[in-house]
Image (tube, rainbow, N blue to C red; front, side, top):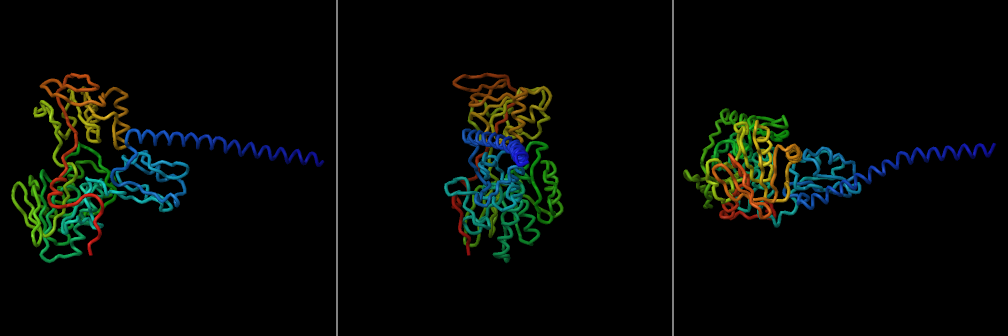
Length: 437
């Protein structure tokens, strides 16, 4: 009887062990497999230069992290984050655009969104917590300060005016340079606070939004546009945002002085003189909402002055059955190539000087890989445009010259940012300015 009980107990233990192992072993194998995949992604990101964050990015308290992984799933840009040995870590930091869903969803508050160490960044102006530069009275709002996203630009335009309002209202006049999301938000806040202002733009009302391709979708998230209300759709097309701009301009009499390019800012005893190509304006404060793109950067190649060369794509549907060359490898270039490839009969070629795409948004990276695999877009990596002729172009790749038929050339080599103008004023770059008392 005792032997029978022992055998039954032993059988129960063995059965329990089998059940436990049948669960633990697959779990362990899956965990090891995921760890190898994550290690491969991190190595790939390091090799391609995508591991390092360039602006706003997640920062972690690893001691507080409990490894749930919610943060890795909510990120709209894909593999920015991953779990390494049960703790969250940055995988493709260059892909982060500072949305902050990871920080909002973390149940233990182990994630914050910040700029990191910017002391050696020559492209990030010094800013205090209220967006003021080292020059008292001059503020920077939007992507010029190193923060991307329409949502952040709108919030900062509003915050800059609020900071001015808390200091002084009497005899205040604000010069707003740029009529994109940050500039328009600042102008609306001035109207709301009854602060006199002037708003100028080197092109037209809309700022950088005007440079977006037709029907480009932009992530806005919930944000309050002064006087107008909450933008709560999450994602807006270029056309929808411009329609909102037109509506608020008309409703609140926002007079954007168009084609007024800023040339210099002179500091005087009681404020500033902003010199433009069409005149000068005095103000007590200046909000620079210029953006970072500046004037389109030219390559300086032979034939670049031909009429078939453009530096932005407004409407891809205008081009069909054409031989098109896209120069560049950033999001703007990739979006243009994707848009062109969807049009009837187009043959789309991309020329990019690097070995692979760099810092692409997740959805763009996925779509361009799909286009390449299907043969809709051909990419010449490690190549440079050498010559633009009337009906052809010449690329140089691995010491070889490639001549191909061509109808249009679109160059997306970035812009010449207004850093020289800022430095001439005396604005410093790098580490943050201490809050002024």
